[in-house]
Image 1 (cartoon, rainbow, N blue to C red):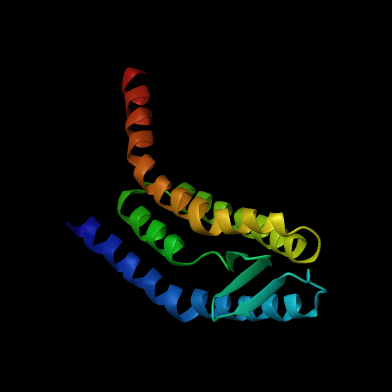
Image 2 (tube, one colour):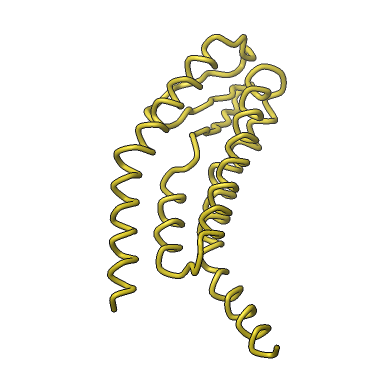
Length: 160
């Protein structure tokens, strides 16, 4: 019971850090990205609209409209993954893995956004796929697969 209470306090502490620190940093970074994207010579068929923590990119091609999204990662799914890990992780390696995944995907997302806005709009699909699909899968997947990984390690250690 004591372990559960300590882990719950850690989760509450991280939620506070998330809302008072990480979220503010994400908003500030999004402002930097949006200011930078305004300075770029973007493709003529693209329109960028900035919100607090994300950019919406509208691509017009004839009568078709494609809508892509970009947002600074370390968001909601990072929060959910981190909270899930507080209850099942035995050490800090899963936290580090979750952070590295978000950081690497953030870089890929930013680079594909810049390239997609200036040279080839098809690269915006990469940004959109990372934001909408890969981040939720990786963030929640670590939490879902970690108990299986621990069980496998326990079986290997038990056989020794």
